[in-house]
Length: 242
Picture 1 (tube, helix red, strand yellow):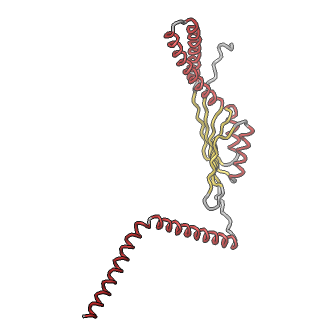
Picture 2 (tube, rainbow, N blue to C red; picture 1 turned 45 degrees about the vertical axis):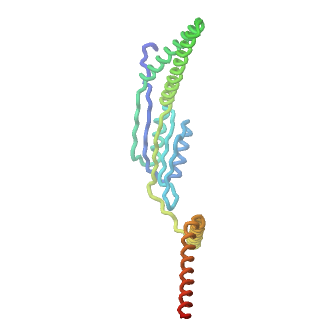
Picture 3 (cartoon, rainbow, N blue to C red; picture 1 turned 90 degrees about the vertical axis):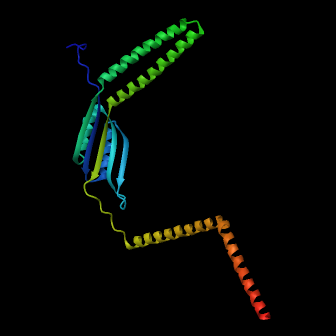
């Protein structure tokens, strides 16, 4: 079979997922990082999930970017880190898309060359504007297709691997000593006092801001009360004179 008759290699976009139960999240996280580094890959995402009280990592998830020719090596190395709870591999053949995009790109570049030649020969302003607009549209299409083509080639060259690590046994947080517990209680109490003081200060500010709305009714009430007392005293004096 000659090189001309050779069957072209399928252009595949591969993605994999693997879920592992490990003894130590911290050590396994370091191991994953080292595997990625050795295989010339990269970490795209890392999510560290910790328990609320202990602050100890209970699970970690990675999104890795691995050269496709090293994908199997990476999956095998990851499988050695713990007990495999699940594993999957997906592949999408984009050979036809690549061929189609390359053909369209070739035709558009030929059209661009032809329009450039026409532009050199065109004399009238109207024709120049028309050819210029068409040339601009063709160049925009070239940029879009070229970007799409580059993106597909990158996806073929590099595979993505989603890795999930979970702790085999939940870590039990150590009990704090008496001094630490007392210190924590003191900190909580002082924090609560500070929050209450700030709250009372805010309430006082609100009362001061809205004082015109409650001072006026209070002043009217005091005035009427004082007026009643004066009238009562006048009535008593009248009754004594009679």
